[in-house]
Image (spheres, rainbow, N blue to C red):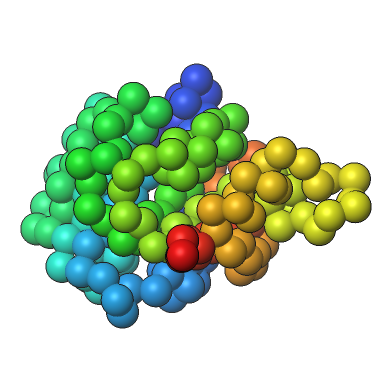
Length: 188
């Protein structure tokens, strides 16, 4: 971790606390899937733990230096795709579970991209800025209820699982984070 320089242009804040990583992985439903798509795998803190629980993990990571670090870990069931998630054609992916520690500045575009894709996701677990998570689960009539709330609640049932302190990231962001679960609504 000491040799890795987080790139501000990509909003990189690395999760460095193993207990928090384990708590996140325990919250992800790996029982009904044999493959997971991870967005922004970074140094692989969550990737390595997930790889122990499932048959295949596909990591989409924009930073080629981090892709090399992931590759050097020699995780047999890991496929690494060095691309920008916002430029990746998701319709060809067949993953039911999507996870990610999303860059805060592009959380909403990533979520909307997944909603608009033909990917058959069933559950998504995203670590995001707490204020965004609060807006996503807001109730009608509250000040923070808006377009983001409506769109996410049209496509999914959303639930804040737990908050995560900024102290478990490097560099430390100026905000708290929340792990949010999205369960796709069945269209009748």
